[in-house]
Image (tube, rainbow, N blue to C red):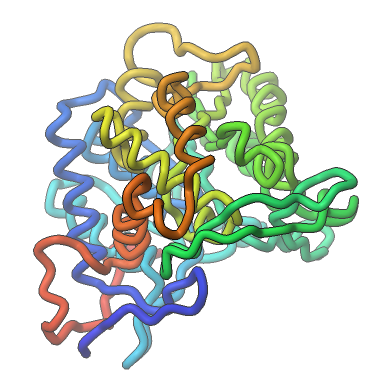
Length: 397
């Protein structure tokens, strides 16, 4: 079939297998070009099919030669209907891993569930024995608690008594407008923490440890974001930020639980990037379009793969003690949060209008990165070519 992007708001309903494959190959080639990382050898990535999770799996495999198991929840293809992009990403990754002689298997299902946890534990036990790195990179709007059956839904709202208002942009049209968001109530805050906080991460690590599947000195890393003052009300000081606070505090309790095997948990604070999730958060698309322009002009722009390769090579596996901030977090957002970058973004923010944004922002870069998430607008791909949507994941368990 000829596959074209079909948009509904902030979501693309289709994905292109060849585009997704080329995207993955490009990331693999980048990691290989940066040389070998003396890193992990047996890696579990929870949330492995897109974004930072996919980049972590690629960096582990093609930077360190690691065997990898990926867990994710993706929609498979059906005749005449494309899979979700993470399905095609994983198929492409495994194809390249097999070609390189690397172990790679995957589990598709609800990572919050006991069933998928047990299936993963059995696969590790059978094939790898133990893992020395666990990446936790889940992004989901809902979570069914495995013990109580309660379904929690997250919300993107500020916290406090006042309605939050600021600029945002519709990245499809380039129209800059004012957005207002009512603050969250206590139940919405609690629900967001239940979905996006650290409880499930800790459940995974506890079960892996109890089953004896964590190697001596094993590490685990989850991903977070802080961002600048302009996004604080809707992000870091909003419901998502409350969940990230919980995630970050969970790292300390996990580290305590891993002391007897010399293990440690870290939270890596990463750069603002175009993702399906960030595209839906008011204010964030405008901030990212300005940030991209500034960082590209300064020659310090990074995508997911550049961020994670740098995290592995310069922080986690540099051979030196892992540097952390006063809250114990790894800061790989250091280039984004540089004073010169943030001062310039703040200046441009004040100037941003429909008319000025094409000059002062990088909306084309934002749109391209958004389409790339779904395998579209990838250089070198013939989108007029008949494409088989029925792609299989070689190592799907």
